Image (cartoon, rainbow, N blue to C red; front, side, top):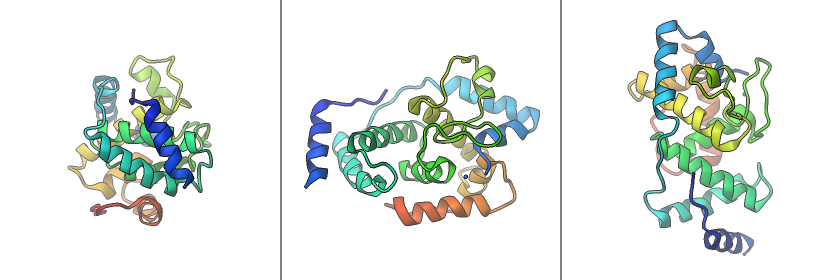
Length: 202
């Protein structure tokens, strides 16, 4: 779990005072061999632990992103907690945290209790069947840590499958391979709200 020292919360609080388809759809409609590969990948990596590489850089990032997230999450403590958790699971999966924030914006608009018309749940809209696929039936996909762990791993898997090609990996995450519509939505959210450094959207 991400480390949350009380002093960081106090410092950051003081400074601050001055979509239609989902990843679960992709997995649910994938070919059997691909589905098995993704199941194994989730099973092998879902518990992998990590932490911030550089605490100072993380604090600077949290301060910057908190002001950007404020229109979506009003409460300061909730913002900081969510951002720290996003940073943790994104880095654990080798993903830019800003990309994960853009995906969340498009998928659920930062509503941890969001449920799609096909039953995908939580911030990154993960299908519940994955819990049984990897032998974790009691996992709660409305839990922020659980949802981000699943969602980030699924996106990491598709990025590996697509040899790092972000556009096609996002389309597969969304279940819309061959279309740029979902990728363009995520890219637009990233450019408007989360961009800090360049990403290759091809």
